[in-house]
Amino acid sequence: MTDWKDIHPDFTDELQAQWEQFGLNPEEVEEWIEVGLKPKEFDLFFHIQSEDYEIDDIKNDMEQGGWLLDELRREFYENKKESKESEGEIETRVAKRRRTSSPERDWTNIDSNFTPELIKKWKDYGFDWEETKDWIDTGMKVDDAGFCAWLRDEVEVDSDRVLNYENIEDLQEQYQEYLSVNHQIQTDHYFF
Image (cartoon, rainbow, N blue to C red; front, side):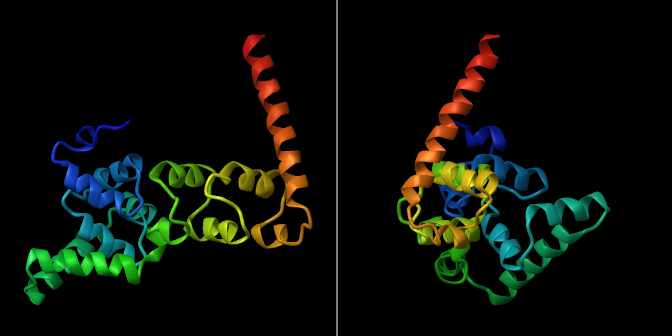
């Protein structure tokens, strides 16, 4: 378990919770901190996301000597100052936006059983929010990330095509065989 103070000494439990509300794991937050966001700038992060920028956009811009992050920060704080909203009103507005205009960051909108660990598992298998939603909408469960990745990568079917299979149980049995064989190969490789 990552101590968020190792990411930045200014992290508190409250700030950590605010970042986690966006569905971010410590490694993702650390990337944003490394490019220049401060732990208290979770609302700036939300603004950047609402402008359709991702961490790679910021990194690429920085590598080319650009000022994208500085411009987004300036724009955000100018708008904040101009509106003269109190900090509490801003937090309320940001929380409301999170719930309404940015459901892609709230994985519990896909399924209320999503936890940070399960979100990380899906992301580790290369699924984003939209792809995960597509798979869950086919009837997959939140703990089926490995199975869905196997379907995508080994069987070469997407979430739309898996709906055409009459017997998903057959595919699940094939996946269990695949896991069994792969586990044996890994075990044999480890011992020899």
